[in-house]
Image 1 (cartoon, helix red, strand yellow):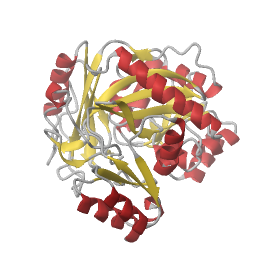
Image 2 (tube, one colour):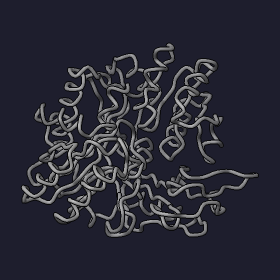
Image 3 (cartoon, helix red, strand yellow):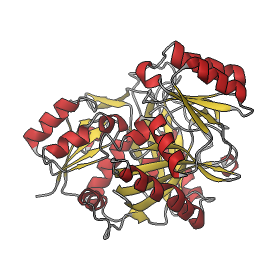
Length: 433
């Protein structure tokens, strides 16, 4: 009998995790809480929200899965991993203490600054008057960040001093995000191409899973509001091996050593959001999970047994882990609802999911299945992936498949994996998750 796995989450990331488990372990029995319309075709959905911690723990205590994989960041920050491990249920993801790397920007910034890990110049405030005074003292443009998890809306990239003052008032005076908005972190804006680097971690040991570049802005040419990601690709041509090694040596390794010294050893997947500035790589964010849509390209282009790698990380021994980039290429194009990331309408039927071209995959995010038909149920609806031996052919496959799929109001960027866009950006991290 195969392994029984519970995957927690409901997005495109969780769909590709379920897909990868089945690819590596065809006899696996997979549950997903709560899942989505596409996940329901390969896994048994469990009608429990990813943040309903006590209900998830009770389900796991009753069903006793062999392994639990936590997809999103919020359940980890709320202590799901800690509670499941206390019940002797093998669980993959960071403890609540380690999840502070994403859940508290103030904690993380202080940790990195103390350890000499490269980040933008940073100041932390819980008093609006002091924050305003600091902004007036700076010659640089700044980014104002809410400390906690704010549904991806807590990073305010400011184009002038007036916008910076307004951002401070929004967070500390108007309390836009409640407790998540205090304290605030003010950082100098950085400029350069962004790169996402992923590592499988067990305490201070880690193995690189690969790197990707994602597209956060809603519209072509890196215009429009930040989103949860409108596409991604791997491999990244300017992410040369020596650059990845520099990030491993200067960022990932020291961060894991620092969290261990702080009493928060990290087990899980660490996602380093890096900006490649003229002065070298700079950390603009950490996530404590696989990215979305980066997971869709990382997990379709890596070799080895993903489940075995996860189990090795939980056991604290990565010596025999063989999950690594396999040399192939993948391009992911997100199909979104019209209006996303702002207001949008749900409930439109999705046509064209069958008979996708060979090498193309459609991972569901905001979908629901009703009477055998699939409907839109979110802002980011589908992640369409083209997989091939080079970026150009992977991109052609992705767009061929994406244009085959239709629903009312479908929106996508048409410039994913276009080399001209590997230029200066300044989104400075956090997306709508």
